[in-house]
Length: 151
Image (cartoon, rainbow, N blue to C red; front, top):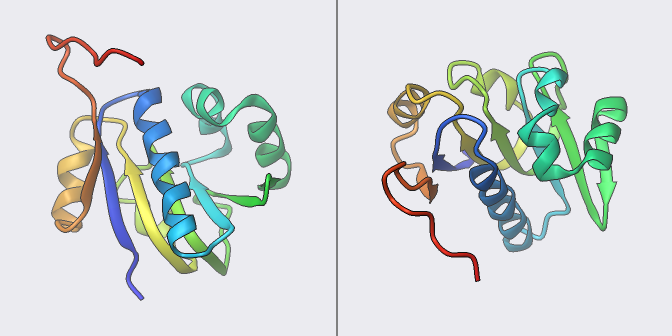
């Protein structure tokens, strides 16, 4: 089965985009009756910064140590170029992963969905060229547009 694809239209360390990707993954897990998801990054050093801010320090510490975290009925598996799983039944957040390396990093059997969060402006067009049916789930407002008010 080919995974469904989703993406954010964002650049750089965008906390809101990564948070939206995680929420999309959680919704997909519920739709697919899955309790497992993946977090794909290039290397463990990419867990610092915005990933740590969005997922939380305690989650990132355990992922860094064990490559896996069980949290409130959800299992999060870490995926990198060097850390692979044979099987992962659930969606994957691909956080700031080079689109040329995405299929290598997210190569586990059973992946149901991939939610891509680009880092550089040129990565989204590369990703979309390879996956034109990917659905946009979040768009960062342009710099000259005010951010939506938080309610």
